[in-house]
Image (cartoon, rainbow, N blue to C red):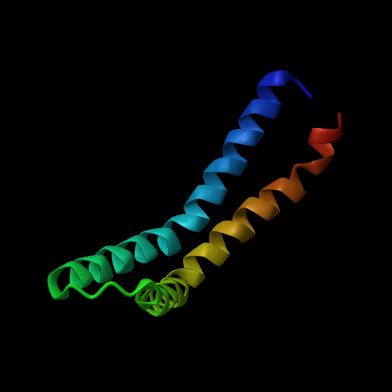
Amino acid sequence: MTMEFVVEMGQRTIETALLLAAPALLFSLAAGLLVSLFQAVTQINEATLTFLPKILAVALALLIFFPWMLSLLIEFTSRLLINLPNYVH
């Protein structure tokens, strides 16, 4: 294995991890922003109010994007396993 190969494999791995995490993080960010805006408008300062909307937003994101996330992960894993003999040499 060359240094370029290791760097490329690391980049692919990080890219895949970011793509898998992005939908849940973005939905959680949007829910947190909306709850914060609601709290600012109504002057409600309850720290625990943000947890349930964020959990529901992440669950919704996973429900919507799960088929895409699963296909992305299967593609990455199958590419990794198919090329495993090439990686050893």
